[in-house]
Amino acid sequence: MAKTTTTEESGKLSFLEKKYGKGVVIQVSKSIDYTKEVEYISTGSLMLDRAIANGGKCFGIPLNGAVTQLVAEYSCGKSTLAYSIIKEANKKGERVLLVDVEGSATIDYLQCVGVDIDMVDVIDTDILLSAMAIKGRNYLAIEEYAGFIADALVSDDYGLIILDSLPAMLPAAEARLEDDKTANVSGNAVGGVARPWGKAYRLWTGALHHTRSGLLIINQFRSTLDMYGPSKAPTGGKSLQFLMSLSISLSRQLDRDKERNVGGMFIKASVEKSKVSPPFGKATYYLTLDQGIDKDYDVYTLAVAQGLIKKGGAWFELPEVEQKIQGEDKVLTFLADNPEYTEKLISQLKLD
Image (cartoon, rainbow, N blue to C red; front, top):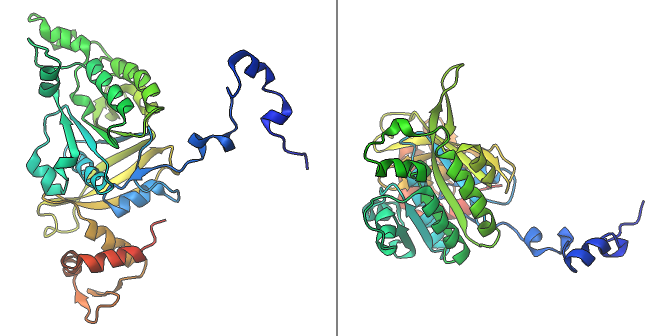
């Protein structure tokens, strides 16, 4: 077997070090950036965390300069999932910045999902216009928001920065049309959103290499002009998709019955891209519109699949519970009413 030599022993870097300085190239095994484990924040759903890891070690949304995309059609729980992630970040003591371009966030709903509102900072168009003393207009362009986000990343003041949402942002070229009272939407150019986002991507690249923060972008599907039939693609062009460390596609599923469909829905999540774990994991979780992700349903699903909860017809046998419980809904009610028992059950689950 040939002897393994280091780059220093081989002397192959002498030319590069003479020209660019000693240490210009570092062995991967000696670089802290390449050997440290990925930090992450749970999504609040055991099923989704498991799909993101997919046999790897990142059970949630990655930090340390990683960019995550949540993309879906309308009314698929994108913002609610983002708020659930904020709640989990708060539990780890991480402060979160919510860039609320849509202006849709409310204190009531954030608290309803369980967010610690004292650990969340929010910025929207009105706040930025006021702080920057900009008068005479009621919008900020993509380029202006992109610069602010780059500075927020470099500041390292936040564990996670959430952009809600990308399609709500206005390109500078379109903003100039709004200023022109004689202009109309027919003046917009093809790729008007994709081009400034390509510039934002290049602007963020340096900032992402020097931050401990994670960036979460909420995106939407748009119909494309496909000559072979209907098709859809995320807003922002292809360049933005190359920036993503993790991309999760969400879709709303039919509920299993009318009783559980009151105020909630099943969401199917597919990991379309991942640089932090093996990609293409899939999960289904239950989302209630008054409390966010139903973690008890995740516990129930995994416990039945792994044999911790034994199912026989309509009856369920739970570990350390003397009486059998009839019906899935009563099992879920029992888990919700006994949080300590549920946490103990979670500790027995295999998530990898």
